[in-house]
Image (cartoon, rainbow, N blue to C red; front, side, top):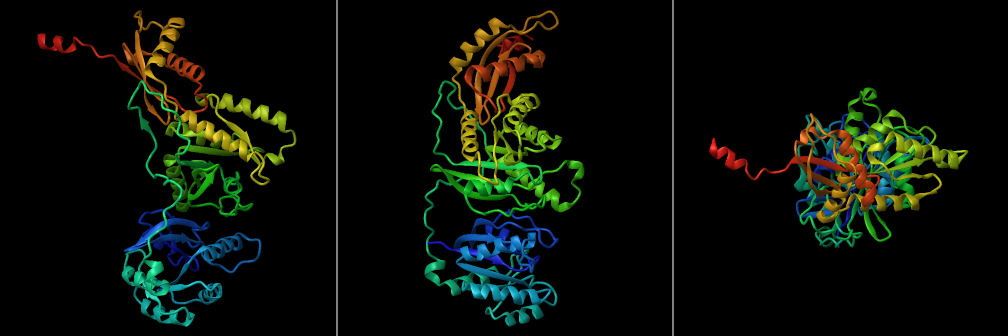
Length: 475
């Protein structure tokens, strides 16, 4: 059956710490600074024999309409509506504040079952705060320490008491969508002569990255068709890497929204460093990475560095020119941007670059078509027989240059990895093969086997000498 729990409370009471403990992983950023969490995050959780979904929320704050804090509060109110149970959290160490009383009234009016959680109960003087919590009228407080894991058995018993054993202990419904793995990408070639068909039913992981205020969260909201992520004119709203489950034309997707990444020299605050580290982790676990560029100020130095990072990580990149509704001369601008893309990113020649407007929803279908095409190319497998027929013709047309008066001999090539495509070239004196000739071979692979826009790995090894062991024995 399963149920969903929303963790609610004012800022800095320890909601994200409890979320991480229930999820069993450090997913949400945790810092002493109030208001670290802004978006709501959902993840599978476990509390002994209880299995459920838990929602981490932004701290409840009193704020004027239209402000960032007000939009954060709206996201928290959505979480309350989605939840079957609310953990209303207070800080036992600080005691009950007027804001706690105000927000407790909001939770009470929602009509949802509530468990009152008094966090930091291990601190000196916390007993007073525990007694004050009775004033909120939400029942008996459960004293816990989210940081140290104290009070978890009592919290489990409180959940069962409020929901009832049938709902709390009921078995989870099987998800109709296939599970999206959290393992790193990359796949070895088992049979070098096989070229299996692309499997378009497997789930896909997509990370969305870019500079602050490029429109990443707005783009994800437009794709999934709901205001799932917090957006606004302020730069740097997103802090955590938030994952969103989604389905596109029957295929399971997992979208990762990441914090805007500024140049390293400008990143000074500890919290921003944590946000960027979280975003880099999302890139490493993604398959396709969408680089969102502001079409009004594209190809800043940081944009190119982010694209280069994706290529070095071996992910499948797709470029998005966002805010296309602000461009006055779209045809001329698009031709200019695509020329710049080819010139500035030669290492992924043929990369997909799509103009979109996340605000109006224009170009989203073309974007997803580009994502699927890039993912298919990223999974390319070429049989050894085809590769070596191509290699023989290519080397015959343009042999490798002589080094120190001696000709390099290229023996054969085989594909050893996919995701991204990786090839092994066997030749004499591999250390002396010029980088320009390797680029010639890579570009030839792109054109002949239609592998545009994704990184291609080429490793060069010396062919085995069958007489080497005999020579050693004679010595």
